[in-house]
Length: 72
Picture 1 (cartoon, rainbow, N blue to C red):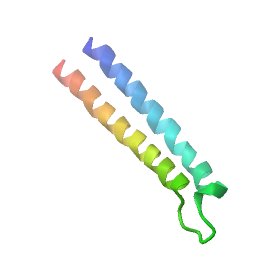
Picture 2 (cartoon, one colour; picture 1 turned 45 degrees about the vertical axis):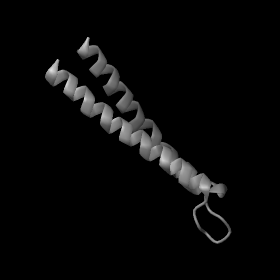
Picture 3 (tube, rainbow, N blue to C red; picture 1 turned 180 degrees about the vertical axis):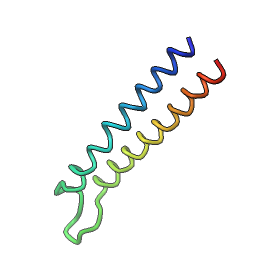
């Protein structure tokens, strides 16, 4: 059971690591990302926050997955 859970966590982490960072270039160059003065908008800040959280969850998933393999 713990091996299956670890595999699911690793697959989830892999998806987050591969998929989410690819959105940043498109978000950063979107017209909604900066206001007329060049300052970051809420649009950019929210999307960067989502990307960072996805990567934090990916790291946590790897740590928990390794823990399941070591303990289980």
